[in-house]
Length: 463
Image 1 (cartoon, rainbow, N blue to C red):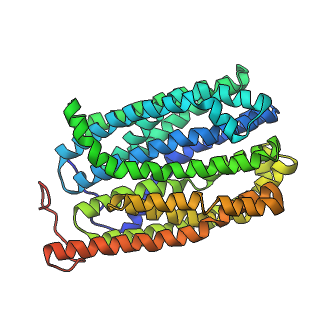
Image 2 (tube, rainbow, N blue to C red):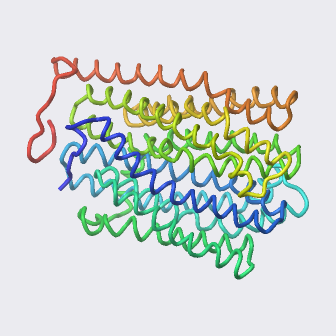
Image 3 (cartoon, helix red, strand yellow):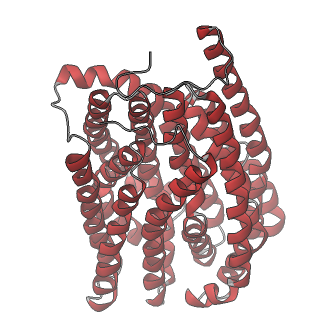
């Protein structure tokens, strides 16, 4: 039975619980990814460390594609759950998983065949380019498994299964944590060991995502070519723009990587360390983007637009609290963090820069995450796409290039962060306009005030 868990109760508590539990899973996988970087850095091979940085920029593309798909499946499933329609929820979940697997295979195959050109465009040269290409050729074919795991976790969140969703990535992290030191250091496989460990982690995520859906949420519906074709349009309406939205981030990161590459391996290594620290430090903010979607989706399905608006502001408040706390912690630990990675010279300077003022500016990225999640679930996904592309092009390239000319790689990272301020504020303003329009349209449709509370029937759809 589909259960609407978010249409009553304290919204800030829902936002916090879903974000915290989701972030535990995200941070688990990112912490081990960070440890992966630590192990590689202990090899005292700057070119291998830089290769991981270049590789991360490329893998970000396939990961972003999976995030976009999971947003669409989660939104459609959550709306069916909010409307108390378990059959529709199961159909949407099944179709989303199958389509996600098919799209993921095609997208990853395209990326794999273009890897030599992609690595060259990023600015990698010599042995660093060879190591980057080898690492990516091993890892990229396993990305569809990661997408299935992400979509499965999103389906569990749509059902309000915060803990089960969290365990998907927790178990993926456990497997990765067990395999990394054995394969990278003990077996002395280096980057090859890291790639093999990644495959094991992805397989574990798939198992942990699909098993709870099978056991507790009615399993999966039969699929056919006509049913999949029919599911493409509604999924594409949300996931299409969401994928474009998510792809903007790795595009912006790739452009920044290309700028930093001109300053040598030490600069790329420093940027790579900062890139690994970001999702660990702000895992709750990354998780918030996925956690707020089901909350908004269920309340939209229950016609509770008053709670949709309140959840939006609670998510922003939660973002501010997390950024302040984690930025203070990063600042206090900046020296031990740099020492952990054996960071010296320019690499150390970039790590210190990230652990100082730049981490505070991540608040504006958090605003974009929240605003985009709201737009994706309220039928304005294309607006989220425009905001994200604007932030990672107009809000990144001019600032990073301009400040890089004067301050080197430090200026590139500062420019990347500063450009997010304008787009963060703009994203919130536009998202509020979407919420207000949806609230007005709903009130005009039923002819009653938009903040009226609708009682939920015990079964059946809300009519």
